[in-house]
Amino acid sequence: MVEPVAGIAAAGTAGDVVAETLRVVVSRAALQRDAVRQTVHDVEAASVQPTAPITAVPRTKLPGPATGVVPLSGKETLVGELPLTFSQPKTTAGATAEGELTAVRVQVLNEATRKASGATAVLVALSRADGVATPCQLHVRLNYTGFSNAYGGDYANRVMLDEYPACVLTTPEVRTCRNFETLKAVRWDGKLSTDITLAGDGSLTVIAI
Image (cartoon, rainbow, N blue to C red; front, side, top):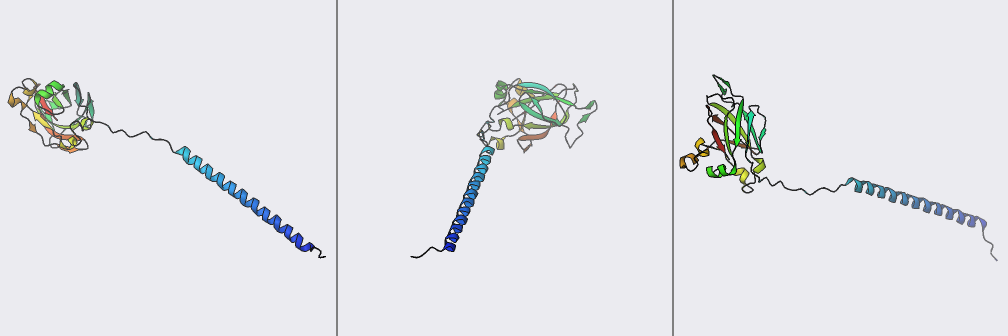
């Protein structure tokens, strides 16, 4: 009968202990790895917020009738829903013997008057707000971004600035009163800008888009 060798049995038992220890260590490492992955996933999920759908701005509403006095500040000012900017022209001093122009009276005409004139989008009457009778030069910048899609998606690239005779406001049925001159305006960033001559003695200068 063969007796078991004690040394071999002991060695086998020690090997089993080492193997079991390694298995426990690997198992714990796997659990820790899975826990870290879950934590990272939870943090990423929490940081992602649902975004509201982007809605395109229609930009088709034409400005309604309004009146106001706008200073020559070079800063954009709303007259009703129409943003306007007035300043001294760079080419002339814009001054008169009676003094330099400081403010402009603005009237955005109603839809009926605009349609009677033949203007497409906006009809605006300008006059000196200081009561001085002498005409003067004025730099005008008109912001049309609010209605840049009023007549199709490419309207912003077709828009022009025109000047009408003042009689278009009172006798639009007279053909000559509807004859306009297209001004040499600069189109940039949704704005049209140019220099115009502002009438004196209470007369109106009429511009239109």
